[in-house]
Amino acid sequence: MVGRPYDCLANPLGAVRLTFEKAVASGSDPATVGCRDWGATDLFREFLYDNGGLSQVPTLSASTVHSIQPNSLVRFRGMIQDMLGNEFYVGAFKDGGVWDTNKFTDVCQYSMHSSCDTQIWERRLLYCVPVPGQNYWTDSSSEAVNNPCTNSTSSPREKRLREDDAVADYMDMQVSGEEFQSPPCPKKMREGGLSSQSSRPQESTSEATCSGTSMMPEFDHKSFPCLVKIYDSPDSDLKLNDVFEFVGVLTLDPELTVSKDDSSDELANGFCEDALSHLPSSKVPRLHCIIHRKLAVHDFLPCSTDMEPKSDLVKGIREALLGHLTTVLGNDGVAANFMLLHLLSRVHTRVDTVAVGKLSLNFTCFSKESMYVFGNRIKLAVQNFLPFTHFLPLTVDYLNTASLAPVKDYETNRLVSGLLQLAEGSHLTIDETQLQSGTLNPTGVENSRLLKNLMEFQKVEYDFKFYKMEMTADVQLLVLSEGKSNILPADLVVPFCPSSVDSCEIVDVEILKLWRWYLAILKTWPHSIDSEMQKVVEDDLVAARKADRSLGSQDFSRLLTLGRLMAISFGEKSLSLEHWQMVKELERLRRERLQSNVPLISS
Image (cartoon, rainbow, N blue to C red; front, side):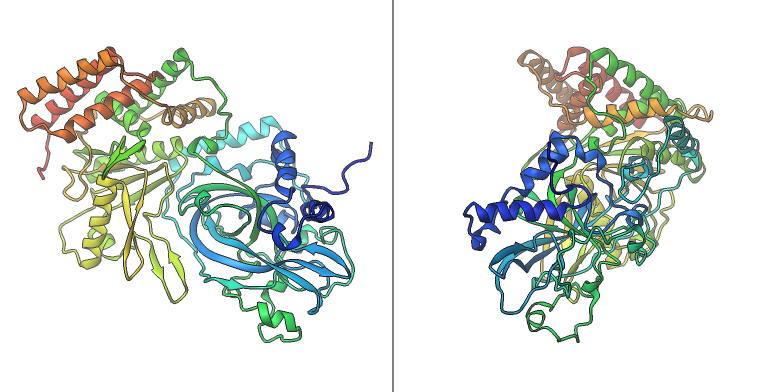
């Protein structure tokens, strides 16, 4: 049986050109074929998903970029940090009576003459970065992959030892702020690259070696950027801040850094005005995307997400996780229950300006001393449970100087990221115990407003200088403070009452995986209330209103959210009377604390 004349993994451009040649030979017009896929995408989809090829594709990251051959197939997981507009390029050319294509390349692999027929096509440019706050345990590139340039293997025992070491370091880990690199690019036109090669190599991969990427600098894994070029995809498919896995051709061509003073080629003069010339591929890799898919939080779990969430399994996981949270929180069971529901919350719909489903949480009665013990425990526990987490020590000086909202820089035509440009499903813990009296300057006032709007409406204003644009968000917010926060109005204020400072035991890796699975999968579950239970809830809310006239619609909405989350935490898709009673009891205990002698600074 004759095999394929190309290798989708090591020689993807060969597969692209073969399908292009077949499309042209079958009668497709080169003038219009560039506006659609001519069969290349289906070919790669079959290889990646039907034939299990995705597991063989190396992940592009700061730690793997030096060992991946140029013009080979790679995948990159990241957030769309900026959308750089469109780029025109010579997509097809006819030389010597034969049509060929430059699709999925920066530089033409073959000699092109200025007199040859050409077709100008268009592609979109996306500047992508690792998901802000992405935690170490989600990094799939740290695992051994089948890389054409590497032969590293790892036994299951070695993998387990690495995981155990990571968990042992759990209490020593620190969360740092994210740094963003966002280069600019207005709409431009370029030829797609010119080459002086006169022969047709096998898409140049035969000449590429691992050492061929030695010009690559050392990258910080948290700020490793990638310029993704998108073909044949509707604009609505890709949005700012969405997280995607892009599979495509990696290009690291030194010709992209050629001096603009080189005017030896007449065709090059017409197309080399490139606003990305200051961003050479030796510093920001180019990925020509063939297939992309949007990722959710559960896609970052190292373990399989195919487990069926059976009732007994879910209840067992819930009991263990709640017990661990209780230990982390100094045997404060009430706080642990609210913390669990907080970790399961998400915005599942919007009604006018209301983000339905969010559950921001404010633990009060923290001091600088207790923050050192329990604050660090909470920070590290959340970091080890959720894929994307941030920790923000709030001070007057920070508010007066920080850049929280993304800002458009028109001189470089780029969107400069801010701390609040976060992916869906991120968690933000804010430490207010360091916040002392002081004066806020205009920047500080604006930053306070931005944080308040994020907490209340799950929206962030992006500053485009001449106007501001609200972008929706879905970020879990936890505030640790001495008294009720005067800046951040959380949905729930819970006085923190620890009774023990016993140390937390190191959790087994497999147990951690189950907890991560539980939080990621149940968060997405649908939920409903049947008519009988709806009547019970309505009667209880009416009775509560009669007993306390200060209760309003926000209080009722919060109770309904708690009911939904309580049912989901047990793996149930509809609210039961038992779970509703549990919510009412938790709320009663919380209100008792608020009315007791627990120190609480009123707003």
